[in-house]
Image 1: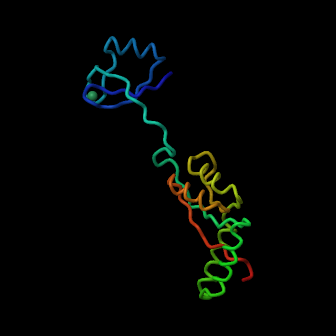
Image 2: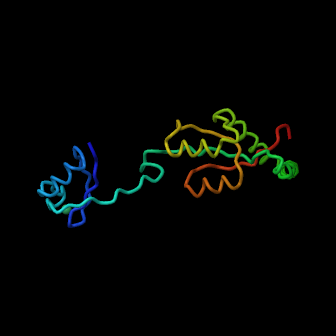
Length: 160
Ligand SMILES: [Zn+2]
């Protein structure tokens, strides 16, 4: 069986199954295919919309959380974060530590595979779940461009 998207001369598009492409050609020649909307039998194959990312409404992603990558490159940033944390209002610091604890308790740590996993979940290739891990600024930007939801948190050093 083969599924074709067809379009009648009035512009209605509809999907129809055929045994094979020959069966379609035969039925089309004999004007045996009628538009379900207007009954028009002048139909032609329409271009199938490419499957872009998620099927409409089928995939719902819980916003995973990305933390800054603790790479050598970003160690300076982490030190800055530690300095920032020292000057942060106590409440804010406690809130961030609480969020971190919640994330660690409820989400799966995927480390530096964060971007890969977030993508898989988004496109329904992986089980929907909360994940957290590290990703680079570049990857985070790419994910955002693909419409993948995630949050970023300053990952405060423990015991600070
Ligand atoms: Zn029609």
